[in-house]
Image 1 (tube, rainbow, N blue to C red):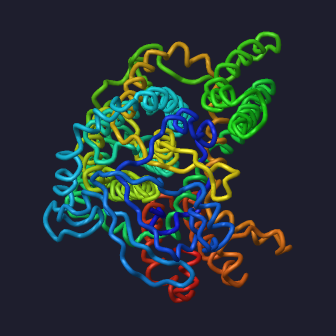
Image 2 (cartoon, rainbow, N blue to C red):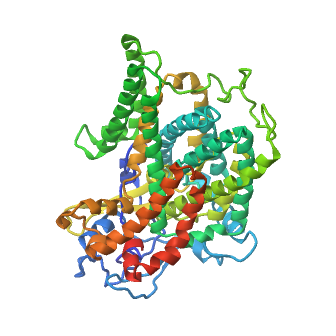
Image 3 (tube, rainbow, N blue to C red):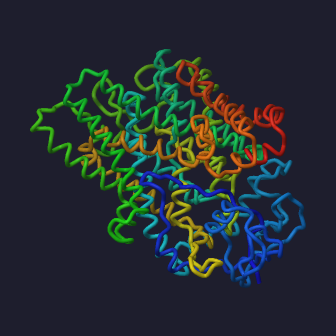
Length: 628
């Protein structure tokens, strides 16, 4: 029996993480078994070529390369996954049907289909995901030898989540002048992670701080400061309004709007996230030179930041090099960020005294388990934020002022959450269990946001890079001979879908809260360097940036072999990229000219722009290539 996925998978790309592109574990390749519940008949007119020596030829080298990485298992076995082959027509590519999972035949509307009922999508998510799969979500973390995957994944993912928490916490500390710092960021990440692991509809998604959230918090803090409002009580009201609006989104099936979101919006949103992170790191570097610190402290700060960034890049690229052996390359690549932090901290503390540097910035972490902010009398602020004011009365007009900012924060959370989940739940992951878009949004609004507001903690949303890190670390593969019988290809066979790793990672985050005295020895600009690495690395794989560089490559022979370069005129590709860049530039410019409060609304406006304006500029065939 010949096996083939129903539609050509999306073009794979490297997925950068805090420690570089996540590797395919050798353990996964060695022990991974084919998905026993996959039946995929392949017609004889397979556009990618027959694996049994048939005469059909690959459609293109690019298509063959994509298929070599993401292809289906070749040996079927009985199970609860079935395939319906639907006849279709298409130019150049034969449509062979779609995978039909057991839950897709349960008689309920699809995850992103309107139910036209009150709480219809939420109730379906609870029935479909929690009632049917909740027990297996825990058992599958240990059953069938999966512990060999989930145990190292938990340890690796802890560092992959902890480093961004430190980086974002450092920037939150600077942006809010100590109202929220590293301790609050780590605590927020831990709390949200545990809640999400226990109750979410898609536990493969990882919660954490994001660039847009940081930028919006900076705008909100600046507004509060200029109007004489205490930030934490204002944040309490903003958070509670956001929780209410998010719950309303969850119970009205608003996640179904994601069916109108295409790559046009995804790429611009991802670009905004990347640029905001890079800009935050570069701003910190510029500010160190504008400060009154000694020349020695300024130079050492920049040296530590630069060396951290370059070392992170080297550790990321180590896996594909010829250095050492395969096992050591894997270990150094996985734990490179941790090695950098330890070595950088030791080196920095050793050179301070010989060079007479006394004003180097270190991480501001409380010596004990207590909030970062100190009140005017020197005592730490109370754990529970008083919404009517901590040291001064909070006016009633301030409550009304937080409503539009809460609407913007709701939009940011909605986009972060749903765009990340759409990426996580792509068909080529070969997930067996269903997603839960409405349930996940409800968990954020009813569980996480109110608690974060009461405790005065930073908000967390679905973090794309960390979520993909989690998915890839749990993906199983098998290596099989290629058609020529001489080379081997690696293909995805599924993933270990469970809640155990998510819970363990964030329990470890709770444990790390006791490391305050140790973290206070870490130079601040070590973490800024990691943040810069995170932002720059996340640019990789964004097609908008790939097409943007074509403006500077005038020799067409050096253009990459991509559909937008081989199937379309040059002017069409440039025009589409120009439209995206114009939208992107407008949002970024408004963020930095004092209109940052409008940023979430402008991001949301990208959807109607794509739906109603862009089709007037391009033909359907052109959009299929550029935005299909």
